[in-house]
Length: 229
Image 1 (cartoon, rainbow, N blue to C red):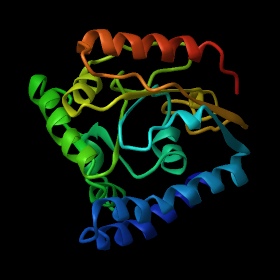
Image 2: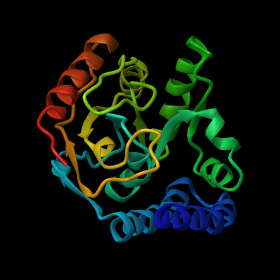
Image 3: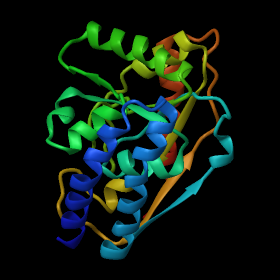
Image 4: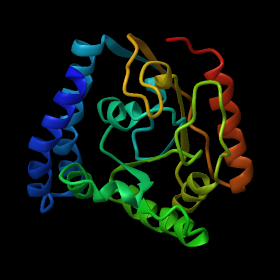
């Protein structure tokens, strides 16, 4: 309860600041708005005794790429802002409608899509993703589209792979077990250490999207089996 109250109050205070940052350059704007994530990660440790450890961060390319990640929890949308450089995310458009929080989120210029739009949504991911990458930000894609419970695997969609191929950048696969501490749609948090593993970049040059996403999926899912909180 303490964590939820602190998170809500801080989002209420930080939302207007995020809106004021809109005129700033995209990377600087993301860095300032991302400051909220540092507070939330700290508050999570204080109130719920949840910490995180990262291995493989040396695999992070110096130039922006597509971060293709497992999606189990709300944690990664916050924790990744602490772990990775200035970034943007592919997310469902409905999140932008949340008062204050959604407005602040909109200020980061995410790639907000209608998940029921089919091919049009895929085109948005690719076109806007290329723009964000060229603007100096990493693009985080959750290929399963929605959060899945620990031990489960959703269908990996090819949007992130298509974006990487179109932009000529590698995919950086990331596995984690945040769902064991911060469950999907769960109010109760469980103390523990979230393990985040950053894999070696997967080059997209000369690859087909399905082959590329298959390679990333194989690495992520095999790594998931090795993680414990």
